[in-house]
Image (cartoon, rainbow, N blue to C red; front, side, top):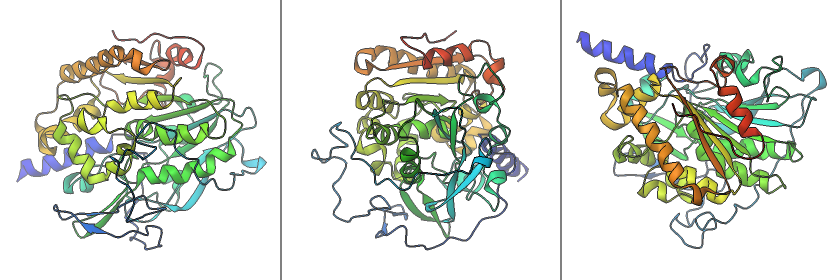
Length: 426
């Protein structure tokens, strides 16, 4: 019994360390039926139900991802989204965080979501940043995985990570060394437990879980893209769960910006890698596919993600958006990544009792970089570069490590510049 309680305590602590803000929402908001998810719920063999097609235009007759006539599956551009009204922020609120409530966005418990903005008149540059914070894919992780189920009553305090609120890392407007200091920032909290990738409602444990992070990004971009159709530069970034999410959402975000005449945005992944099998086992990937409804999200443009591994999304994004300049920054022995991969590969108990070694994660990261380098012709004219460094820390770009980690700043400046820039893989 003592070991049982130690296990659950450690599980909660480690997952909570994976990117959550210091001030998290207290308690859960009861689920709401707003009519937003106009879907027919069907029961799966595992006792869960599927939301079907996307919540905004659910259609029982929608074509499957395997349909060869689906433009998303053949590599053609996505159709332009239904853009809404541009966002407006009062002049006196420039340089401050402002919460944008979105009744069309939902969190795990069905409550209303939204996103935060910090705009400036210094430039028309834009950074869209997806936060991390926990995971929810089964009873144990949904109970103790550290993923907020809502944004709380005061989202600027309860939903934004402290380094974001305090404008550290590349959010720092005062540091002249920061190449992103004059950007307009849009930050999407992680409140769906699905790493911003899902499109599914799940009935489990007498609860309905809204794993609709991917659709939330669609709702966000419908407001943000028309606000920055004239952007000088667009950077898409994410940390931890948000690093996974920004890769999964790159296609729909890039397509939206390209539809208004923008080039392919930059992609920055911070501590959210998709390593290849067997480092991330097929069984773990299948668990997420089924739980989060990934056939309706990344499956619409990356069928290779299901046959070869989720790392294939990097090649799919480059193929669909020529000229993409992407980067992955992470430590070799990241404690949170090792814990998460062990939980997915072997189960949550193994993550506590026998976590993946630092050497094993290093091997997986090097294998991923080797594979990307072997795909240079397929990725061209795009570029994907890696910055790996020693240590167990989790996250670099949104914290002081952006300036204190030797070489990181220069690496990001290279990505934002012209021509090629080199990976760092000591």
